[in-house]
Amino acid sequence: MNAVFDSDFLIDYLGGLEAAREVPEVYESWFISIVSFVEVLTGASTPAEDAAAREVLGGFEVVPVSLEIAERAVGIRRARRRLKTPDALVWATAQSLDDCVLVTRNTKDFPEDDPDVRVPYRV
Image 1 (cartoon, rainbow, N blue to C red):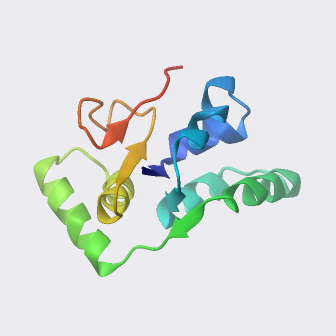
Image 2: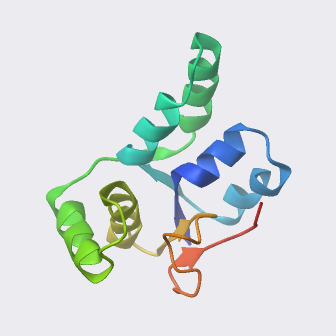
């Protein structure tokens, strides 16, 4: 099984949260949406943080937003009006890949009872 990791997870991972450290090892292929790439790097406040984040993110395949992903995000937002566009794009990215789940700790925006959403820990 493959996984798209959302921004909340990546921030925990970069911050050294122990619960996040072994989670990626469960999955065969590791992906992130270009949206998460932008969100994570925006949070880097120093050149050293930026370099460290880029090094870690280099271990994930970055998936650009295609028209297919955008169309899926439209459908997600129509069904879940309160979900913000960046979150819908991340979720649509996971849905667009074969044998893939979304890994997050964001239970406010992503339903943890969805079979394609994984919440591996809580903080």
